[in-house]
Image 1 (cartoon, rainbow over the protein chains, first blue to last red):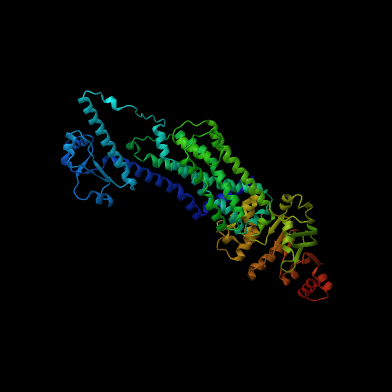
Image 2: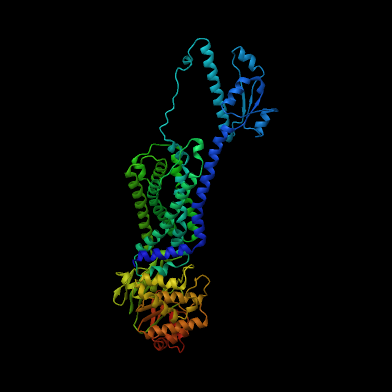
Length: 387
Length: 239
């Protein structure tokens, strides 16, 4: 048996028996999809609620025509009595509409009528309902204006001088994917969380328990030892990523996205592509953790370094969130950033150039291998055996 | 056969070894004596291939440890100063792991492991995880994993340290058994009566150099003392 396989086998056995490390490694892949499901469901509910909100109106009796029109648009209406501002401020209502008493008179004289819309601008959850209602009033206004122009023998087109026509190049799938940016983030985080136990245990742990001296007296190359440990940690890391990916996609498929006009459909092919895109990251994450682990003298020491390391995948996430940029080929070569872009694109069913997979795999593996070589060099040092 | 010639080694400002020369023959038990910090463990670590000396040579069965550390390491079985164990592995897992690292064939590994488990009288603990083992049980696991590849040279760094009377005796019996098998045994110890009774040769190290070597009788006459302990103290303090 090759020494790498011997070390790999031992580390996997040791890792499997470490209940506590296993728990913390694999609780994440199961938590992430629950989070995804909860967040997405909340988002869908908020949007569909906006259309179903019952609109409280003061002075229904003043504008029978408007009310009839609203009812035609499937808007539920209730008469409101009391202090509108207090009701909104106390969050009893998302919004209250006030129709003035002189509505009918002003309307008859063709004068502008103000319909008051009482809302709380700081409440994000009420915003969809408010903007939905604003849109309705705008449409009603346009309808009436057109009718009045026609009555005066003027074509309504005179009102439309420059109009905006929306051409959204994103497919519906892509719009869903934009909302799904956190799935790639979770998968990348899983790479860091799931292999950490073994990566730290087999480096800092080995020093702390003083098992490193007997180990290094065996007639095998230090490179073989380090590579065996690296593969073991990477296997756990990759397993965590695949679990997170598959479970998150499963969770997404349970969210009723079609209710808000979004279409999310991931094929088996896409899952395979995403796995190919991300697995190199497992190797990279483990190599980073092992390098930090060998610098640390104790398990605790190592964990505090590695806690900071786990923030690293947040950087490309924030970068992508705040500066949405068109992906360029070189970006796939940047470890972490490349994988994140690739994942978002595959999730969005966007065509990804084949070279991107190659770049992403190479950048992850080369960077990982480089760090492993540095770790192996550190293993050569005499000071490694001292506690 | 284990041989070191003119070993010197410093760690920063500390001169750990300045001139250490001795040899341990096959079929003989060689005791390494010296106060704490005298350089016993450092000399042994040079022989394990873990520490490179600044000067001098270390040779095991004709192989230069510094030039060919891996081949030299395959000729030695070591009970190091740091007797760390993997808490989640069983005694047998440890023996198998080290056996495989030495490239022992899977077909014979189990039989070899069983033989050692019998020899060290550890049948009842062989398949238990080592977490919670007594010091004596831990030492037995360390010995078993050090001997799984039938090494022709065995080095033990204070093997009876912290053991109860029964286990210490079992370890001494094992050392005698290794000698009977024509193995070169080199061990360090602080226990004078153990050294006096077991060793064919004694090497006394103090302050990084060898101050005396020979049989127990030779050491005693060199110091003109009747008692090994008195002789040891006299030789060490003369430096």
